[in-house]
Length: 548
Image 1 (cartoon, helix red, strand yellow):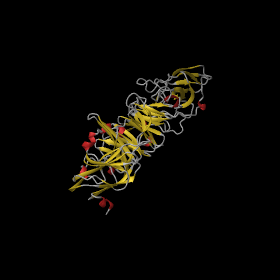
Image 2 (cartoon, rainbow, N blue to C red):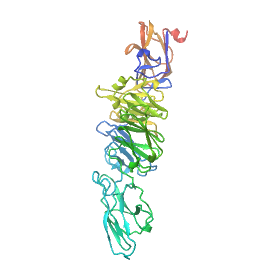
Image 3 (cartoon, helix red, strand yellow):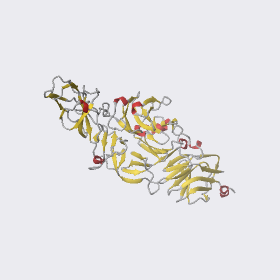
Image 4 (spheres, rainbow, N blue to C red):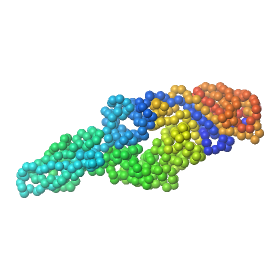
């Protein structure tokens, strides 16, 4: 009797050990399986220790430094091309914020050391009291050149301008000012908006009955609270375009960069979009609503965003935030159990549901773990705790069941989930996938590390299915095929009970210790030095192994 194991696969715990396919595993640790080969993994590459005092959940690279947060924070660049300020916008750390080069890495760590609230509120803004700013006041002085001249009825508004040159929505409209040539309108601009905003000045707009337009037209820029206006109607050209440039909702989270130079975020059951090219502006007219609260969002393709909720997912589609449409995926009633489980993994976006790891892509929706874990096994890992990360065609899933005091990490290929999972040692606190370098950065055990990029090797292990024989047999010879950078240890056992082990230094046939015949047996491989194995052969004699 002989056995050949090739075309290696990972674990499928839902299947009894004796019913697995010959190339499937009952136990794995710290190996990778690609193209049917099983090989050693590198240790992680140490980058630096974290600078926060507690568990580091969120990280983001910035100009050779790292932003670090102990909470669930999302961060993105502004998506407006060459940004002279190198701005980063982030949510989850209180109200939405923006930081940039002059603020982010000055002072002591953790970075960002300083930031501003995102948005450009109107003059007179006080959150909760004057959410739309306050109206310009003033009076008209002087004597008209000709009392019979046409009276110009004017209404004024002002907008704020911040350090980035971003202009916000106008304040409340003033009362009417009746002006005739020869007179001066004296205006009091409401005070600068309260809050941590970097406002540098204001812009004044007015209507004019002597112009061909009834829109608010630009008058001047300025600072302070006092100004005058004696500009004629013929000199007004530029029209106010920021009427709808609302502040972002202070509770908005999940900031996400969209193709087309705009951003998305959410709060409760509201999906928000920014004005293209203007990350500070979030028009109310762009908002979309789901039936139940949103849990997380992620871009699937060029013009499509997946919106997961506490009930079922939605798809938002459109080339511009002004024409986005939202529709539910009625063919799959799967809630998102964990916001941090959403990840772009190449062929689609995954998220952890109460029933398994769901992937939604352009080709459809599927439960990746349906044939790997039973619902009870999946629930034992507490899907509400799960985080997912992308790494070279695989999805890493890390979990922690606090009640049972258990935790772990596994890898799965979303393009071929039938290949099973591979266990990875340890628990991951947070991570960031850098697409430009194809590296996965992790916060783990108090450090920032690069996954699977170290100079040394992990101690990897792959254990086969349980081979059950109708009559007991003894395997006395073995051969392992592969690339031997070091030695491989082969162990025979029954389940986790082991009864024979030896070093296999090369691909030649080797004798195994004889002994008791057994009705069931499995094979364990220990890879410690970068080996790649593609076949294992077992036989009852050396001649049988050689084909003699």
